[in-house]
Length: 297
Image 1 (tube, rainbow, N blue to C red):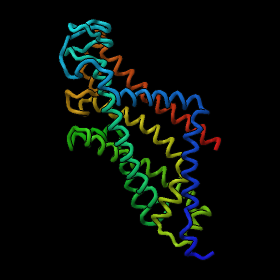
Image 2: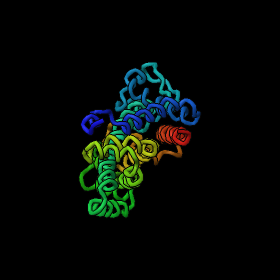
Image 3: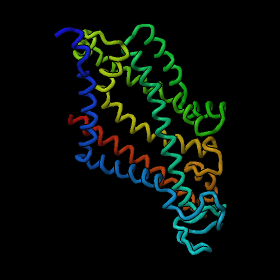
């Protein structure tokens, strides 16, 4: 078989890596921990998708201040989770706030992974000066406390959803880069990489089609865990007043706005906190389930 004909063959490393990804997702049903996590995540995804059908009130409308859970409104509808100090329905704000979290958290995580993976592939595969420069940049960024770094970036460029994505990408991509770099240092010496070099494939094709799919196990698990961390970050930034500008629903902002009334009206802060915790728990359990499956593979 000639080198030219070999270059037209499907990439064995890429095909094997993608098959393992599909197999891991299909085998998730064998892990009850992973299934519980997937159920919690799916629950909030469905809540976000069907928010207009679930809620009865405008999340920003001032209706009846300080109504306790189960109180009837003037229109005959029920405030299932009560209202806040401004008379806004807490259930409606939590439901619509789930859209905010489930949009910006995956977007920020995807952005951080895109930058981190590209940096890690270059550093691990090419080595030398490229590795030294990228590693030193990562070390400098990682030397700062993460929360302080978030606050510095948001305070500098302003509070908005897009700027939160930028801040999370800037602070998280170096950690992802180091994970990818370590995986690439091991995988670049495998036989399928040598075969790709024999076929004359370019460095970027080898990195993206041969090495990256075969590094998917630890990266998928880390992505689920990192999604939980990003959700915490969005909540903390909202609590500090550095999240989305009001009056748009934001779980962390809801806790911040009502924290001084938590003793008298605990439900105002309790329900948003439960929402944040349940979604984070879902992603963490999903990561545990995926890790169990990876160990069996």
